[in-house]
Image (tube, one colour):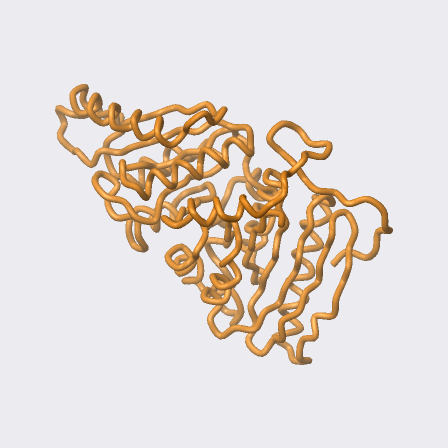
Length: 337
């Protein structure tokens, strides 16, 4: 089967940005997108948009205001994004669930990526009630991308195409998984990777005042970093830049990501980056980064390898280098979802 990207929506600007990001990610990977909103009392249904044609199935929702509002918001969001990417299949789904984050994480069991907005509709009892993004970052079985509502204009129309992905590492297994994911992502996007490790050293004699560590400390850190990069990159045709800094890890990473397509971190680390769990570096990056933040789970590698083994070879159709999409032939265009 094709790759699968799940995007959580609740009608907020943040969730609309998440859907736009998910669709552009699908372009890079030749995947399909499942746009999911969660509503109390809703019956599972689907409206599926097969690129470049649309097939609509009844949502079969109960006739009450909350369900109608959920369907309307989902339909509007999907139609808006679908108009800009007619070559991508989007499945719009309204699901029943008391806990939006748990429902999204269940839907992401066989997904490649789960995408959510950093902020949602705090006054609506559906999806992304403030803590959903944070909960998904901890519980999701696949990598989670958190898209900030305050993103620069170019991010509002999908991933910013600056040509670089920044990944924070601390020599742990978790950061190695994050680096591997970032390299594969860069290969699909045909862009470069900047690998950043941050020393928490604050000593004045070890810093030049601009975040660069002293020569002795940098030599050791760079040696370890180069070994990590060599082990993770293999023969991937990706340009990789390594950078050793000192200071506050989340602050330095967010600074480095200002001109990047995204910032990638692992969900657990040690050493200079500390424990990348909810409430520490990963969480602070997700809250403060101006760019989308990908949090990579430790089990990503094995799940990814199993999924790839089960997929047929993907053939790019009329796309530029590093981008592929699947476009069926025949049929007639109908009304957008």
